Each structure stands twice: as structure tokens, then as C-alpha cells.
Image (cartoon, rainbow, N blue to C red; front, side):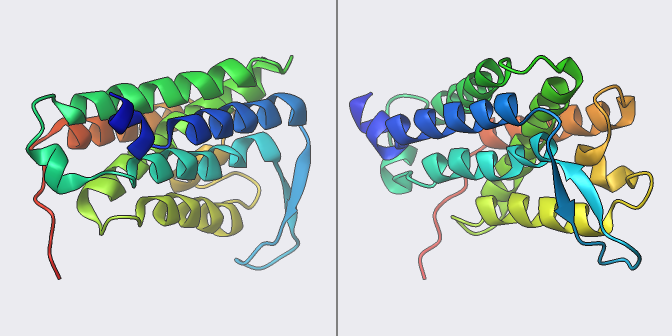
Length: 192
């Protein structure tokens, strides 16, 4: 278990998840200016809605520490430990984010983290190793600059208010599909 925690950079990931959750808790409704690449004037986006994207990069960094050949031959089911790892990371973030008094902002941030974690797990499963963090962060940047005018586009679900059911559904589906991909049959490492 010590080797597993060391490979997953457990201490750094736990500190990063708590710090990111605290940023959400302290930022509250603080807005950040965002350029409008679709044309027109720029607009502001709540920082707490964007914080989960780089936070998922912290989780992806922990998963990138895998030793795949050894883990494929391990006696313990390492994929199940990775599932628990991701759930604990999301829980750490949610715990730290409860510092905010604004329930809507907190709920939307946790929803976004769950959805981005699902996207990260899908990217981790089907794209080259180490690219999962870049995929989720790039999706957040593109969605922020192109997906919002007056009302965010459906595919920019992470910018929608906490009460938006479509955004919640998309986040939950992404998380379920990502967790299913994580616990599925392991892919064999490619040798170049």
C-alpha cells in the first residue's frame, strides 16, 4: 500500500485537493474576466466554476504515477484502488469547498469537479498516458471562451448555475462513464 500511495503522490494530491477546495470556499462569487472568442464584448465567469478543471489535473497527476506493467501483474485489484482514490479526491475537495456560505456556488463547483473527473478518467483510459490533465483543462478553456454568451451552451455545462438539471445530468453521466472506463478491462501498455 505504501508503494501505491507513493506512486500516486498521495501527500501532494491531498494537499492540492484541499487547497483547491479552499480556493472555491474563499472565492465564493468572485468573478474573473474572460475574453469572448466568439465575438463581442468579454464577460465575467465565477472563479469557483472554473477551479475544478485544474483541480482534476492534480488527480490526473496522481494517476499518471502508475507503474503499469507491475500493476497489471499485481495481486490486488489496483483499478479498484484507483476508483477509491478518485472518490476520496472528490470528497476532499467537497469538504474544503464547504467553507463558502453560498450553497449554489459550492454545489456547482462540486458538480463541475465530478464531471471533469469523469472526463479525465475517459481521457486517461483512451488517450496517451499523461494527456488526461491537458484534455480537461483545454475543454474548460474552450468552453469558457466559446460556450458562453448570455446563456451558456449545453456543452459548456460547467458554466451553468447549480440548479441546472441538464448540467447535473451531463456531469453525472460523464462521471459514471469515466468510472466505468476506469474499472473496465485494463489496457496493455504500448511500447514505442
